[in-house]
Amino acid sequence: MTATAASPGAAGSAAWADALLLSFAQGGYVQAHPAILQPAEPFLDLSGEDIRKSLYLTTDASGEELCLRPDLTIPVARDYLASPSAGKPAGFSYLGPVFRYRGGRPSEFLQAGIESFGRQDRAAADAEMLALALEATAAFGVRDVEVRTGDVALFNALIDALDLYPVWRRRLIKDFNRKVSLTEDIERLTLATAPGRNEYEGVLAALAGSDRKAALALVADLMSIAGTTNVGGRTVAEIADRFLEQSTLKAGALPRDALDIIKRFLAIAGDPNESAKQLRALASDAKLDLDAAIDQLESRIGLMAARGVDTKMTRFSTSFGRGLDYYTGFEFELHGKGKGNGAEPLMGGGRYDGLMTQLGSPTPIPAVGFSVWIEALTELGQSSAQGSAA
Image (cartoon, one colour):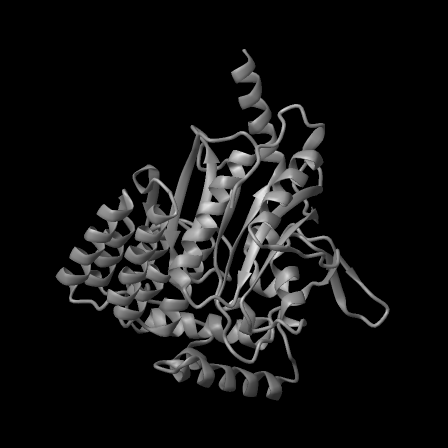
């Protein structure tokens, strides 16, 4: 795809965004027009905490909970699944308003982006997304950017290989996806539970060694006997997960050797190729099978280079995550040079292969994409143009 740079003198974000959308169309991505009003459930269940707490919610006459779309990935995915193209390779672009509470900043703002569905060549599709994102920044006259990448599939593979209790696995992956510091939680999980009587001692003892299905059944039975379906707004599943977590923590601590391996893993960062070598060394030392996940990483790095991405200027970190629960693999963000970790990205995206089945697809469908933060990119593009003029 050849991106045509938008004129620095273009009036407002919309004109710049139109030029960007044209460049996406030239790359073969058909423009999608999802509805502004969406069912709230997918966003409440599948998005990150930041999106969930910023939703604008309403209820229709039938009682269905709806929301103004807070982003466009889920709406585009829903429309794709409802179309005759569902399950087949298809690519879509989009440009339109999204709505989130942002604490003093406008709640309605423009977002553009690309979503690619159904491609089985995952590493190549990942590399294409990053390459297209970099071309899109150039369409706004921005070339000096920081590229931050990660891969949640590597962390998931590590946790699976360590063969931890399912409760610990879910908890650690949840922490990772929500961009909270894992250190405090990991340290706490290595400490034995303090002695003392819990008012639910009998329930915890009954759940010791149980899996999630058994825990759900027991808690459902107990709540049915009590004649209730929720406590304090928590569902049966949420209460079961909490009891199961407490019973697991009571039964023992996270093994110290597992803690050391996780810490070593999360410390790997820097040049992508060097990071892959360090991951191979870690897997060998710890006698863990991480080959498939590392192979995918190395394949992606090579394909990124083939697409013209300077991988030596790309930072990879095993601890990098974007805070969205539905990501399953490659994740990335583009930032203006020198912007801190708390700054809004210019673009961000990644792989979310599990989302399609969560939205109702009977079979898994590979999916990857990215979103463009028009406001941030326009502001940086105008600053770059003014700097060049000076």
